[in-house]
Length: 242
Image 1 (tube, helix red, strand yellow):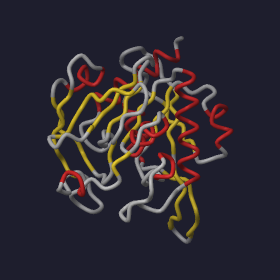
Image 2 (tube, helix red, strand yellow):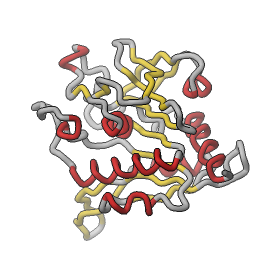
Image 3 (tube, one colour):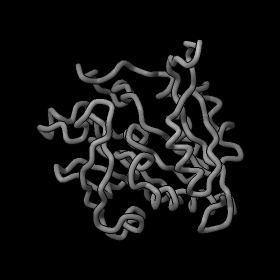
């Protein structure tokens, strides 16, 4: 089904990650991504193309023929990428994924492709642009509201700034699915905070001077994200028509 806004079916690159997995009689290292990401792209009228970790030098070639990039959630970003010491709560480094997705983001921004960065993806976008992260939110906000249950997504409301691309999707407020213990600290160059949790944590960013670049700290692929994916795929379809 093509994008409802344009009638075009844009190709969207989705970052994946490398993990050990077991299925049937097999137990191997695989490149994977929750199917909810691809399903959300498909439902909005896009064609998802999985981009497994590779040499960072291949990122620009990987985006040839792609009309948008989605950087998915997952493991903590290595604090060495923003010049910080590792907190005891920060997960083990994933240099392959950090390098690959950072290169994909830089290549997408250089091409002025639409970008949707989800959870870790938003954090990495911020780091790529020179920002930093809060490594363990409970130490700052005093609660576990942003990651309330192991292995499940919580819910909370966010306040959305007016006259933004995000406000065109959600209006002044949204109920979102949350599962993260880190968050954006100092904003990267060109990023504008456009949504906040009740405790003041930045929950979404947009990038000035680009066709459509949006990062959300929550998980629209699992809850109440149809309108956001529609907007993203419409932007990708417009990029395909350039």
